[in-house]
Length: 276
Image (cartoon, rainbow, N blue to C red):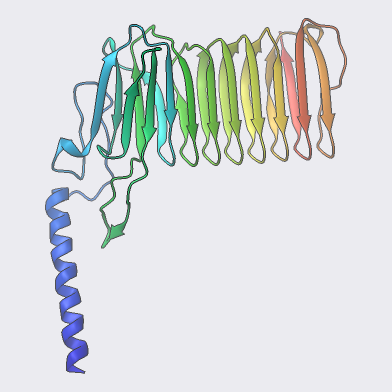
């Protein structure tokens, strides 16, 4: 009995030490880290050192493509206040940035040990990656994540490719050359997107878009997810090809318009309207 009490007391003492150390690190604030999204100021709640954060800046001139490869970190691309590209993250050890001579900027999330003890997060695994672009700068962009969400708030880009497994994709408004969004179980939500060509693909996640315009062609594909949205122009502007197994669709194949539109589903529904 005494031996059990001694062991329990020892464990309690160790827990108290860890708890106290965490309190010192967090300065009394147990909230999740957050980032002020400017290039100058980084505010990390829950850390006593800006060294726990990651910040990288580089010139936009000569940069033609940005590639972001994440695991479970949420990725946001938007405009910053400066004239340089800024990369911010809540983990100094969890993100790696490289530049190549061909004008490619690569941002990679590195998987680090991540665990919580007594409500204290001891992980160094990045939970957020923010890319800040200079206003008017429109590089090609490729983003891939496993479970992290992707949000694009830039107004103009080059060729844009977004891929997730279970993360959601959100694009409120965008003008780009080509646009491709693919997910397995995540949702795809688009506002007004204009591109030369547009490709939306999902397995079980739903796809919803307000109004898209793609003069070079539109491809919509689903297995069991629903696809709902509006296409710019009238029905006569499209040549439509529709395939479905058990899903419902309001589209019918046919037409001789200049814009090819293909829509396919297995069991999901397709509800696409034309808006002139």
